[in-house]
Image (cartoon, rainbow, N blue to C red):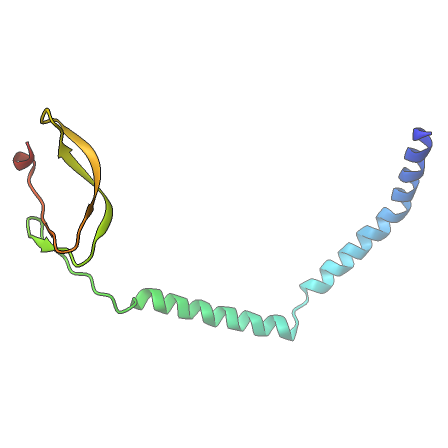
Length: 115
């Protein structure tokens, strides 16, 4: 019984497969042809792309201020989960995390100062 079903299915596939391939090929050929709607969308996407490029190159009105090494700065807002080095009870330097609260002063130290 199963062999009969398999034979029937093979015959059906052999009959309809060439027509299905032809229909798929025709559909693909039709979709490759440009239409007025595709051209309009292409122009919009291209112009939006240029706007994004300009926005990223010109910036958002932010300003970067370079702080020289060794200068002291005061934090305007809390910086959460800052990775720091601290001394444990035996004086060994270990990694840790803490929140730097707004108003704190921060600066850099030389290697000789830390040891």
